[in-house]
Image (cartoon, rainbow, N blue to C red; front, side, top):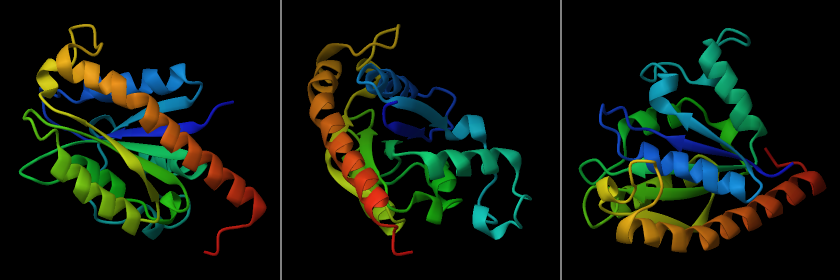
Length: 196
């Protein structure tokens, strides 16, 4: 069985352009042999953060929150697909992420950013690097940034144009980097339990 990779996507907008990128990533990781799953914040629709998962009495967290906690705990790696909103991160993805803490620890994470403009969500990607590090993940150095997201995929969801070509070109190194860190983290957890 390949690496268990959760791919998180957080837009709640009615005309979501980045969902095609997230879905393509699921397929691209699966083609490499990973067990990839899309975690769509809009579909899960967790409440605005009031209580973190760990703050609920055992067995009393909402069912969707409980199910996602188990998926996070048993995943080998994470990919965060983030749009850029006013130089910052998407609130839907940030809200989903903040419901958990210890569940994220000691696993690698990678960032894929996008935007309608030419900066390709780079500022959001930079912000997520610090957020994910603070939450106990090892953020890999390879990133993907897709600009002009509305033109980067065709009607069937396949990469198109210059943006799509750049995505296809960047993905192998990105996936290799994440797989290397995933293997390293898995081997270390087998060798020695995390310190906390």
